[in-house]
Length: 195
Image 1 (cartoon, helix red, strand yellow):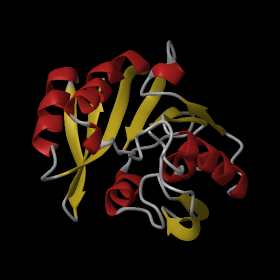
Image 2: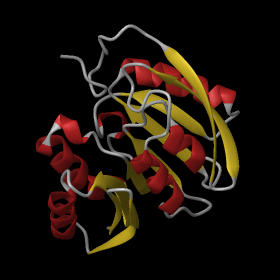
Image 3: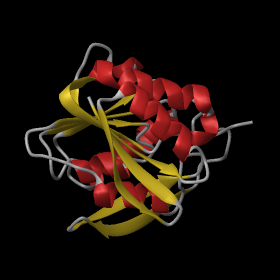
Image 4: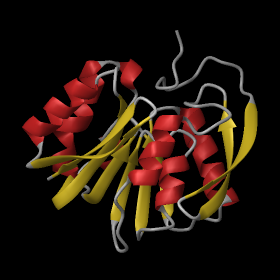
C-alpha cells in the first residue's frame, strides 16, 4: 500500500495547479497525486497557516512539507525556511513551487523526520503531521523537536480533534515547558509547544 508518507508513491503522477490567497499574499501551487492534499489546501493546513506564530529573522523548519504550502507562506514572513519530506515526489513538486512563487529564502531537502536537519536548530518547527503514519511517528516528531529548537523556540502543529488531539496535547505537555492552543475550528486544533 502506497501512502503520501511513502518514499516513492505508487500512484501514477497527475498534477493540478491551484491558486490561493492566504495571510495577505497570493500563491500558485502545483499539487500532485501521491502527495498529501491533491488539488487543494486541506482545512487543517489552512488553519495552521492562518494561526501560526512567525517573526522576522526566524529560521523555520517545515517538517513533512508535501508540495510546500506551509513553508512557502512562511518564507514571506521569516528569514529562512528549510522544508523536508520523505516523499520524493513531494520534494520534486515543492522545488517547482519554490520557483513558481519566486522564493529565494527556502530550500527543500529529502529525508525522514529530523534526518535532513541533524545538528541544526530553528526558531520554530511547523508541521501538519502524517497522522496515518501512526502514533510512533507522531511521538518522534514531538519528543525530538526540542533538540532542534532554540531556547524559547516553538513546535507548531495542527491535528484533527478526533484523530489524536488529546494524545498529541498530552505528549506536548510532557515535552515542553508550555503548550498553547493557537486555534481551533473545522474539527482541527493548532497547538504550539514552547521549548
